[in-house]
Image (cartoon, rainbow, N blue to C red):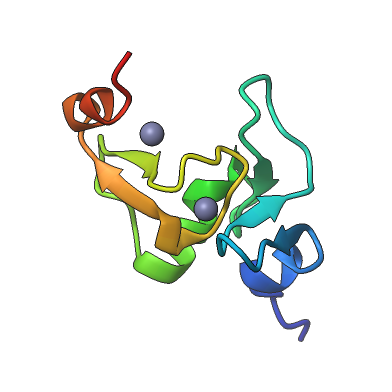
Length: 95
Ligand SMILES: [Zn+2]
Ligand SMILES: [Zn+2]
C-alpha cells in the first residue's frame, strides 16, 4: 500500500522563510491576486495560505476569511493568519 504524502511534505521547498519577519514566502504558482495556489490533500486547487492554516490550526469556519496579520499576501505562515468575518476583514484593510 502506498502511503499518502502529507500536505506539509508537498509544500516543502516551495516557500522560503524570512528570518527577519518569520514570513513563509510562497514560491509556487499564484493566481491574479498574488495569492499562492496549491492542491490540497483532496486534489482541489485552493489558496495555499488557507491550506497551511487548516493544516496547523484546523478547519476554517464556514464563511470566515483568512487575514494576513503580517500584510504579506504571499506569506503562508499560519501563525501570521487570522480567521475573521467579512466585516472584520474590511476593517482590517482601511482605505
Ligand atoms: Zn507573514
Ligand atoms: Zn486581510
